[in-house]
Image 1: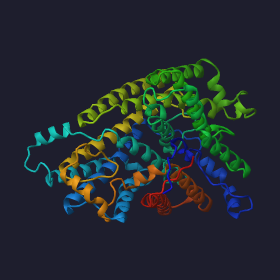
Image 2: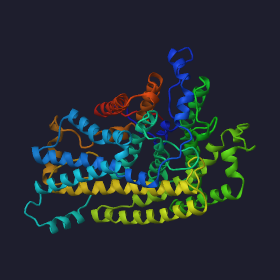
Image 3: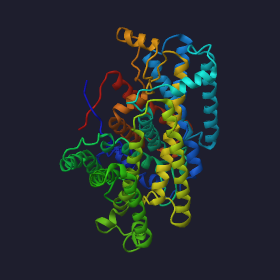
Image 4: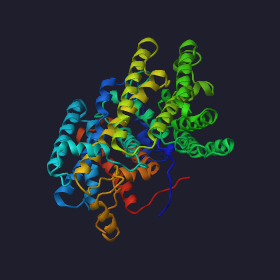
Length: 537
C-alpha cells in the first residue's frame, strides 16, 4: 500500500480548464492552435442561467446517491445477502451516480425538472417496496417504527454527507470541464463573463465551501495548538503544492502560447494562486480571531469589499483596467480579476468554516440530525432574502469580482445542496433500519449494530466474496481526489486536442463523455480495490 493523505486544496486543477500543453513540434499542437479563437469564443461572453434552474438541479446528485443506496438495500432483501460482485458494484455506481448527471447537463437539460421528478418517484417506489418487504419490524405498527427511527443512534465520528458533498462536487465538475466544450452542454451552464449565475460559477464556490468545512481549524480540538506562530508557519508551508501547480500551469501555457480567457483570472494568475492566497489568508485570520467568530470575519470581509467596489473606482478598475480600455500593463492590471476576487473567496471560506464547526458538533441520534435541516433552511431563507436585497439595491452576482452577491449566493446554494445530501442519508438510515443487516457504502452505520450485522462483521474477514462496506466510486474518488482530477484534466486535454468538440454530433459527444467518465472512475476504483492511495506531499 502506498499510504497517503490527499490534501484537499489541490482539487481545483479543472477550474483553469486544465488543457494539456504539447510541444510545438507536435502535429496535434498545430491542429489545436488553429482552433483556439473559435473555442475561446464558444465559452466567452456568457450570462448564465436563473437561480431557479440551478436550484432545481441541486437535488439531482443526492437523489442519485439515494437511488443507489435503496437499490442495494432492495437487492439485500431479495437475495438475503449484500451485493458482493466488484464488477456489479462498479457498474451500478457508474450507471446510477455518473450517467444521470452526464445526461442531465447535456441532452436532458431541457427537461431537467422532469428528470428530477422521475427520480423522486423512483425513490418513493423503492422505499415503499423496501417497507413492504422489511425483515425488521415486520409486525410492528408504523408509529413504533418511526419512533425507533427517530431515536436510532448513529456513528458520531462519521458524517457521510460531508464526504459525499465534496466528492460529488468533484465528479460533477469533472463532467462539466469536458462537457462545456461540446454544443450539447447549454451555454447558460458555463462560466459567466461578468455578471450572472452559471452552473460552473457555482462549482468554483462550492469547492471553497467543501474544503473549508473540513479545514484544519475546524477539526482541531480546542487547545491543541500550543504555538500559534509555528502553526501559522506550518500552514503557510503547506500551500507549496498549490503554488507549484500554479507556476507549472503558467509556464506551460505561456511556453506553447495556448489560448486563455483573460477576463477569468488575468494574464498570469490562475485558480491555484487564488487557492493558495485564500488558504494563507484564512490561516492568518483564524490565528488572529477566534474560530467560532468566523462568520463575523466573513461578513466584515464581504461587506467591506463590496463598499470598496461601489464607493471607490475598484469595480471599474477590475472590469476595465486602469485606463478604462481593458489595459493589461503592469502586474495588477494584468491580473486584477484574480487578485481582488481572493477577498470574496476568502469571505466564502470563512463562512464555511463556521458551518463546519456547527456540523462537527457531536450528534448521534437521528432526531439530532433532523434538527440540522430546519437550521440550514432558515439560514438559506435569510441568505436568499439578503441576496434579493443585494441584487436589487447594490449589484448583481459576479464571479469575476467575487462580490457580496456572489458570496451570499454560493453559501446559500451550498447549504441547500448539503441539506439535500443530509436528507438522502437519513432516508437511507430509515431503509436500513427496515432491512436488518443491510449495508450501503459511504452511509451512516448504526452505533449499535444489529445481530445480522455483528454476525457478518465477525465472518467478514473469512468471506473473500464479501466486499468492504466502503468499496464504491464515492470512496474511491475520495481517497485519490488529486489524482482523479489530474487524470480528468489529462483526458480533457487529449479530447480537445484530438476532437473538434464544438462541431461534434450528439452521439459522438455522449459517447466521448461517457467513455471519459468511465475511464476516470474505473482507474479510481481499481486503485481502491488494490488499496493504493497516493500521497503527494
